[in-house]
Amino acid sequence: MTRLFSTLIGHSLLAAGVAVVSSALTATQAQAIQFGFSNITHNNAMNEATGESQLFVDVTDASGGETLSATQVLFKFSNIGTQLSSITQLYWDDSSVLKNIISITDSGSGVSFSEANKGNLPGGNTVKFSEDFVVDANQPTSQMGVNPGEWVSILFNLDPGKTLSNVFSDLTSGALRLGFHVQAFGNEGSEAFVNNPVAFTPKPTPVPTPVPTPVPTPVPTPVPTPVPTPVPTPVPTPVPTPVPTPVPTPVPTPVPTPVPTPVPTPVPTPVPTPVPTSGGTTGVDYSNGGSGVDYSNGGNTGGNTGGNTGGNTGGNTGGTKEVPEPNTMSAILLTGLVTWGFGKSRKSIKK
Image (cartoon, rainbow, N blue to C red):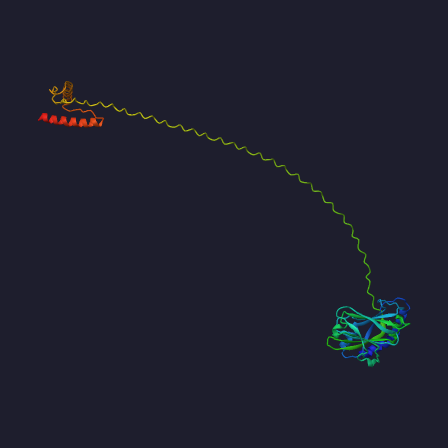
């Protein structure tokens, strides 16, 4: 059904396509001429639809333009869809316009092609396709082929006397046909395609109508209301309260308590006890009074004194003898001896 539809469309539009290309040939410069492809193997309907919807070739001069008098032609094969697929082999069935391949360029890493010996387009015999030029992807084939988003360009010299306008004429008449083998579909199938003889001009990229940049209404710069500088209230300098200098309390000089000069107790001058003259006898005091005894062998002074003193003292005190306090060791010894002697004498007398 798809094949029948493609065939009917191809035949019905052939005449219109020739007219379109013919009108393009009258200009010295035209837009890029692009051709679509139709499936010829019909191995899988999904793969067939993918190839016909996203595989295209642009035909231009060497500079990428369409100078119809140019003596070189550039074929740019593109995979512009998103479905998995890889263009791995390119074929040209030429009548008389292509001379030789000059160069092969590509979109970059992941695409690599080389000119190959003659080969056969899969399913080409069903459309009587005769291969004159072949270009293959390098190994690994499907990875180095034209995958979604990639492209490869083949530049040819034209036969002497031929121009780009002859190429367009042969493509629309079927005298020049392009074919390619596509592998690595999502279901791992493969298909072969041949270009449609009807050319169409790719839709130019719409140029957006320039929208004038709106001129913003100038907003007046707001004038800020001047804020008066606040005048600070003067803070009076604090007058420090005078701190009176402390007057030290006078510490009275201590008046020393006068120490009275000790008055020495007068020591009475000791009255020496009269020492009787050798050989004399001290007078004896009798309690009943009496005259002193005069000793014949005593001195006058001792006897008189002893008698007077002893008699007076004895009479006055009732017989008590008063002995002066001795003040020397000699006097003390003497007093002791005298006292002892007087006592002994008194006792002797009493007896």
